[in-house]
Image (cartoon, rainbow, N blue to C red):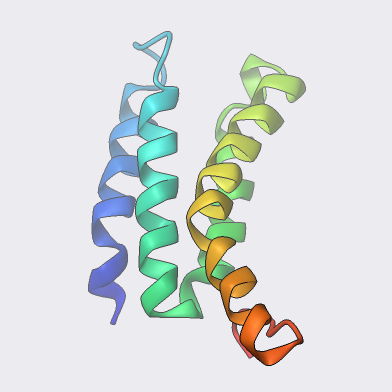
Length: 103
């Protein structure tokens, strides 16, 4: 259900609203990415949402510069990856092959 992703979306909305005012708001992106990653462990349908969120983050910060926009987008994606990647790695040892997420 999409309700699993709501805490991550809430933090993204807070990050989006605080964008013009706050100088350092990367902690909201990291927390939102970790919540998205935890939700992906339960339901992998949100994997495509993460890619969409990365594009939206880059689009939102384009006025600050391309490098900063891409680095914030990569920060969110890294936070998601840190939570999600241990699961497929752990599953690959007993089966002797890796299983792609979402298949």
